[in-house]
Image 1 (cartoon, rainbow, N blue to C red):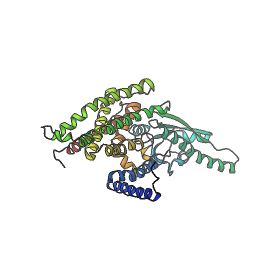
Image 2: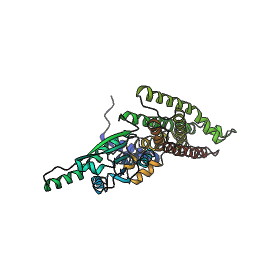
Image 3: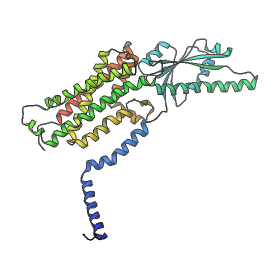
Image 4: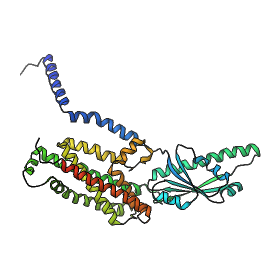
Length: 385
């Protein structure tokens, strides 16, 4: 039976091994940066992204009664940090602004609003954009509170003068694009975006890096195959897998969750195919740049899936975030695809406004696809390090 080792030897060995591991950690700059930057990125993303507050929500105020009493009754919508009131006199222009996504709500006061208010009570119609049920619910509460404040002040003045009660303003709510107010209706199109992002960017981020690690990519460099041909050959099989995922998602959305699809199915599939191509090319580009499977998977997760969850408008309105965060969100392909999918599912493509919004989103995705295809084939130039 061997004698126990002295405690001093244990401490010396432990110190030596710790120094060795510390030097190895410092040499591995990529993992070190990931360990230090990932927590900061997550805090920044979720700190700014996870917010149920609404700020400066664009609201069209259609005031068809020129009487000063009518404008005074709606004065609570002006100057509030919660609203960006846009005064209009034409309901048609307000509806067009709603369809184009320029406003999230319409407050309409009819032509006899002041007269009804003087008679004891009047009603305004509140039309909400149901593409984001969370924001719509918050806007409804804020509008009711904003209209109740001037009425409460007038009630106090009336009671002080005559002891009578002032007229109140009733809000009659109506929801566009999601009449039932079902949250699943706007969550499921967003889930399609997240699934395609995960399937595309995360899984294909390993393909080129795996071949760099195994040394098989060098064998392709001595063949007549061009970099673009290599990229397309790696893209094709995963494109078929992604299309199968798209079909499964659409069937689940329609048959299981009963989400309406008001846009043409062919246009939904075309938009999904375009974004899937962008997502796959992003994964291949990351794989070609990093040349390491572990690093590629981490970068893909940080650059695609997490921002798509928080900064694309999936659960939170991007316009409620700081300007810098909004700018970053607009740079993400997922943000544009999210808008296209929600429009096609819930709003349809019947009006010129929705058609223009869909065309802008798909044109942006096409530009991303071309840029990423060029950048990815540049990572596969036939040169050896």
